[in-house]
Amino acid sequence: MSKRFLVIGSNSFSGAYFIKYLLAAGHQVLGVSRSQPPHDVLLPYTWQPSAGSFAFHQIDLNHQLDELMGLIKEQQPEYIVNFAAQGMVAQSWLTPEHWYQTNVVGQVKLHDQLRKLSFIKKYVHVTTPEAYGSTDGWIKESFHFAPSTPYAVSRAACDLHLMSFFKAYQFPVCFTRAANVYGPGQQLYRIIPRAMLYARLGKKMQLHGGGHSVRSFIHMNDVADATCRIAVDGVAGDSYHISTPHTVTIRALVEMVCDLTGTAFADLAEVSDERLGKDQAYLLDSEKIRTELGWSHQTSLQDGLKETLAWVDANLDILKSLPADYIHKP
Image 1 (cartoon, rainbow, N blue to C red):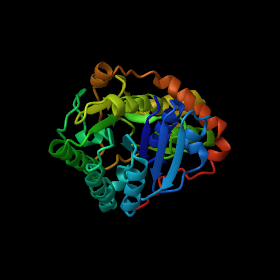
Image 2: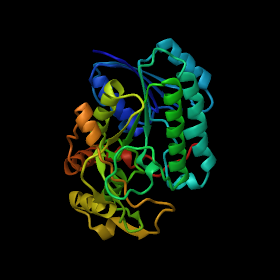
Image 3: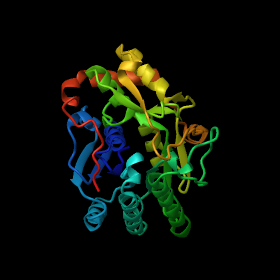
Image 4: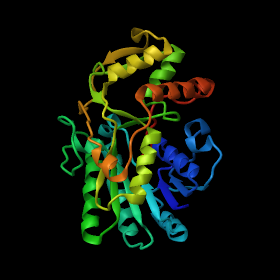
């Protein structure tokens, strides 16, 4: 049955891929982002015929809250999924006030308005495992945080704020914390598309700290499926880990890309200093969503990397003309 969704942060990789998933399922989707949509090659929901309906509005959460609330009250979405955040870790040390403004202050103002609306069935806050800090083994969902960067501190603060709204007002919030997402359409400054693009262009990329940190990578289509299940059937006040049980070091990941592209590791990567405050591992136990909501991941890392490389190769002329580095917007 068609449902009404609002996706905040619709131009982000995760937001755009989630919209792709929703439209394929026939839902009505309203997308909001502060910037104009990027090139279609970075906008997965434009790649397929749509069974649902979609409308986009350019609205800046920090400066146009009244406009956003007017739109929400007019359209009355049943489910709001919020991907909007200042999301880069290393850059958050440079101007931390921008991260706290967008990830805490702007969000608190939004939530204080949303809590008064009776038509919202579920508000899904897409947050991050970085709030936990570096994990010691596989961890279950909790609100016991030890963030180590301004970015992570800002996300942890917003999570705690939302829990206070759930307890005080019964605000129907659920939290998602996903492992490292990837897939076709991801921004070029992320490790997987960057490694693939640079391999094809014969360029070198920096491997911070030698790539010894451990991560779990999960295809965005599996994350979209999980996020939709959480929106519709998740328990208000609960958080859900979205992850595979498989891990890989960043160096081993780059080596996998080298194998797929026929590139020598020394020709693609050069070791640089570790990033300030970088956590060694995020290992998320995802048994809860598997047991309670019947979710399971479908795409192996090897298959997902092949699919992503096919996207890079099919769009190489376009991708090499786009900025490959993160561009900060206050």
